[in-house]
Amino acid sequence: MLEKAVAVDPAAVVSVLVAAHRLESLAGVLAGLPPSTPVYAAGQAAMDAVVGFPIHRGILALVRRPVRDAAALVARLPARALVVGLVGIANHDNMGGIFRNAAAFGADAVLLDDTCCDPLYRKAIRVSVGAALSVPFARAGNAAAMADLLAGAGFDIVALSPRGDVELADYAPGPRTAALFGAEGPGLPQAVMARARTVRIAMAGGFDSLNVATTSGIVLHNLGARRATP
Image 1 (cartoon, rainbow, N blue to C red):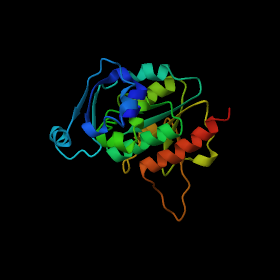
Image 2 (image 1 turned 90 degrees about the vertical axis):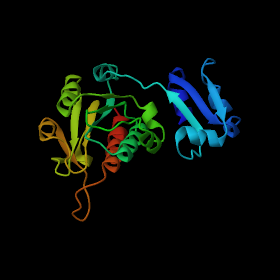
Image 3 (image 1 turned 135 degrees about the vertical axis):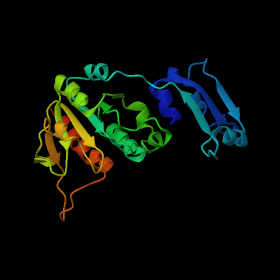
Image 4 (image 1 turned 180 degrees about the vertical axis):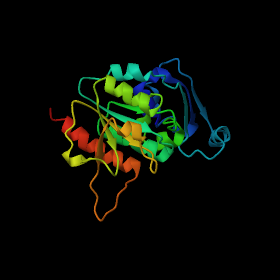
C-alpha cells in the first residue's frame, strides 16, 4: 500500500514508520519520497505498541487525506468516461471490492453519497489492494444530488436492480456512463431509479441477487469493454 501511496502522490505522505528489518527491502519505494519526508525505523515490539496489535507487515505511513469537490472532479473527466456511483454502501469489504473493480476495469472516478462508509478506512484500503488510494473519489451529497450532478454533466445513468427493465447484455452504453449501486437489501432509492435506465444481470435458476461488489465487477467489466471500442 505504501508503494501505491508514493506512486499516486508522494508529497501527500507526511511520514513513514517501518520495522528496522524492512528498511533494505523498502529502499526503492522510500526513494520515491521527497527528501524532506521523515522515515523512522523501529523494532517490532515498538511497532506493535504504536499500533496496538501485532503488525506483521511492519509498515506504517501518515498520509494526507485528499479533499475533492465532486463537481470539480466530474468537470475534469474526459469526453468518454465511466463513473461509479455508490449509495448506502456501509460495508468496508464491499467498498474495497468495488474500488478494486473500478481500478481493474478502468473507471475514471467514484462518487459516494453521504451514507457510504470511508474508502480510506484501513480494511477498505486493504481489500481494494490499494485501489482506494489511486481511483479518484468524492462525496456527492445524497443520492438525488449525485444523480443531478451526473445528469448535468451529460452522463447516461444506469441503476442496477434485480428488477431492472433491461438486461446488462442488451444495454448499449453511451460515451459517458455512470453506473449506480445501492446497498444490498434496500438498494437504490426509487426516486433515483425513476430517472435512470434500470439494468439487471441475468441469473440462472431463479436466483435474483448478487453481492454488490460482485455485481460491480460484472457491470464494470461489461461497460469497460464496450467503452474501449468507440
